[in-house]
Amino acid sequence: MADFTREDLAFTGYSQTIDSKDYPKTIEVLDRIYIDKTEELEVIHFCNQFLKKYKVPQTKASFQKAESFLQHPSLENEIYRSQLLDWIASNWIKL
Image 1 (cartoon, helix red, strand yellow):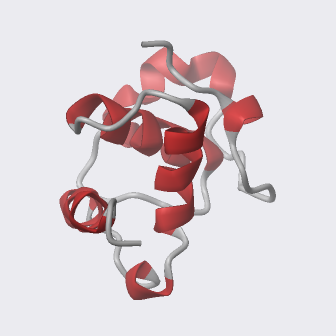
Image 2 (cartoon, helix red, strand yellow; image 1 turned 180 degrees about the horizontal axis):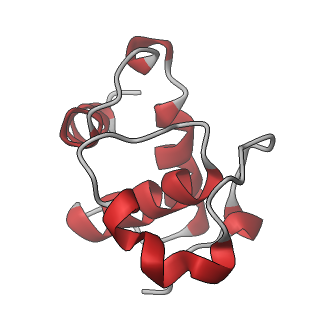
Image 3 (cartoon, rainbow, N blue to C red; image 1 turned 135 degrees about the vertical axis):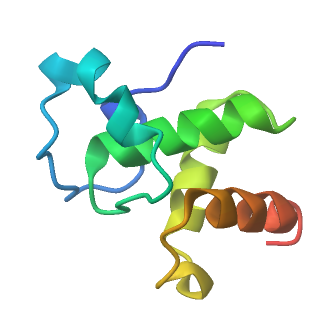
């Protein structure tokens, strides 16, 4: 499975405070407990992580679906990576 990139995102306007040139150095930031849903590289990493962890189609549509779930009103104040992953997995087929 190929990792999806910023060209595959459905939404625009994300912050780009993490320099993509230093991406290998940012893995520790990206794998932390919390996720900043406004930061482009964190969203990309999270969505790719979701696709790898759960048995969902490994397609651009699934990547964008995971991204759109991050914007769901029920998750507006949720920042914990594990909670976000669990909620999205639980609601993948329902919504």
